[in-house]
Length: 502
Image (cartoon, rainbow, N blue to C red; front, side):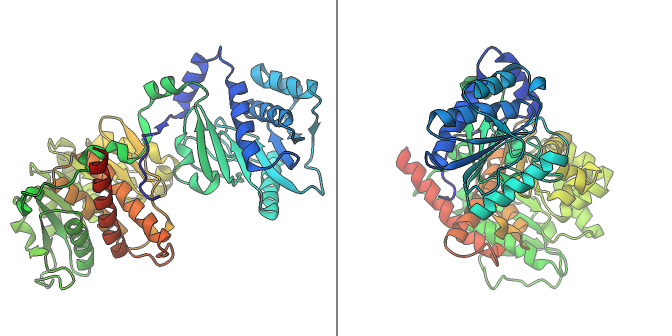
């Protein structure tokens, strides 16, 4: 269900994984991987069904041979297409190949014609591939995808779909479109961000007995409620609006009033005691007819009178906007920068220095283009390694950062990072970022620590969008405003659930 709570799942980068593999070289990791894959594969089809196994020239191919042997022991007769050179296999992969052959198995050079496959297993290339697939491998990937679509059968990727960069989530050419991915030792970031979610299907993890070692190394995690569960508690009866803080929002330049109003409405329904919205448009309405509880003010009058401040929704790039932002950067309250505020910072060295020098919490919510401006690079470079970009932003500006997109990356100044898996394509519509920023500033105003306010709002916003899809509202045509009430319902449900478990 949307927002279902699980312990934080560790994510390891490729260097950490290689370190772990070297340290565990005396353990039968390939045998464990193949056994786990055979067990999962056997649940995806029935004994006697036709199973196609694609085995590559390296360690991933070794995993595939162990998997094939395990399936054979379970009563299957898998067909193994091998694109490597048996004489060049080494270590565990060579032993896995020999066990397959000695057990009566054989390898094929081509996919047999005329078969009705019930399962296809991708063991061509694993986490070490850092180039686009070409030649025979590319042909096999295309054939596997076409067969899985034609037969409507599962396609199980071992460790990582071939053609997907497990570190970055980038697909640079042909890639397996798996229905299931079984990742070994630990989850890899590329499975959950960028192109990863479109290629991995249902992801499961088998630590191969290295759970403690993975936990000791991890600095990255899948974002779950466990990170901010301590903030999910019911309200005391003896409270008043002052108990829940004043949230301030500065934005709403001419033609962009709606952005500030969306953020304000989200902040109000996320529980801020009062929400003050400072509009730069001199002709902005004096009251929000759709949400009259919002307190609309001249921007300069609210900068110092709030518990948390958001600058950016519809802020524009005028001299007035820059002056307001410069003043806001000097305030002692938590400060969230979004949209135009990020672009102003990116374009002005003095503002960048002021942001990096802040002692009070700073939070940034860029999309890839805004992140590229802040880093002085290109959108392509940001998207080529989303985790690295988010972590560099957090380091450079001493801020809590969310790099928005498919698999939003939350990075903290202390080096921890998270990938959020809630949300869906319905969120690719105008105003979603304004709603998210309003949610964050509301949680800040209520006293949530900056890291938990950012991560909690990101996860909750995506879960709200997922709940709307489950209710038949989207993903096509889902609007930003619709996620506000869905988020409110979920937040109250989560708090009630936490109270029941206390």
